[in-house]
Length: 321
Image 1 (cartoon, rainbow, N blue to C red):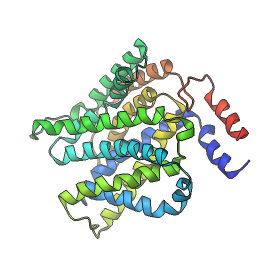
Image 2 (cartoon, helix red, strand yellow):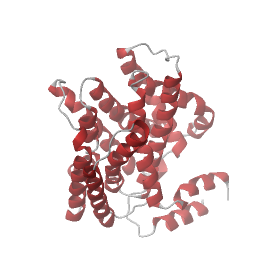
Image 3 (tube, rainbow, N blue to C red):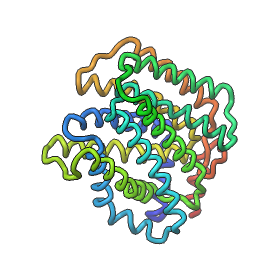
């Protein structure tokens, strides 16, 4: 078996539930990284340097993977990256920077499963069963309970509250676009992340320059912030795309209902923030909603077709080369 085939097989060999659990852990760590970041430097400056360093350090490995890729494929994945990384992070981070309370911004971003489901039905005429919708609503109820103590209405202009919501829809559109991309027009994970991060350096630089200089802050806190967000963002998006290749957009997005609860556990462990019984109750309710979605959303192959045993099918296809 060639090295290329081995690289294609290793994500398939990992159970989907394990990938989803890792996704929740890494995704939630990103919010804690953002919390840590604002104490040391402007958030968009850290995001810009995280993206730039990722692009520079991994260019020797990523560029050869993209050398023979068609311009149409490169443009497609660049567009997905602008929406998934640029639109989502800019919407949430700038919303908070302009006065939206962090708890409310996080709740608006956590509407992602509903946004993915609505866009899938309205734009792509996808069909979702009533049990899936029930699971999504139950999961959202749990998220509201988990974050209820952190919710507040700030003094920002009304239009600013739409930024986190626009960021959520940006990621939802990117999710559906990525899922509908044919396997023959897809990039491998490293090439995909590198290209998306590269294209997002431009808007991140513009947003960072609006607030301050693009020069890095000479402090250990800034360096640690860049390192933390690099791991959480690249790991989070990498696992998100891997899970999306194995399942439906609605299921993958719904799993992130657990990220607010785990974020609060991170905050308790690192910053001593209190936990409450309401957070525990909300987590259980979110888990119930996710369970309903998982039971009623089939796994899918890369071409979007449902498959009862996708792992074995894809493994055999990869072995055939």
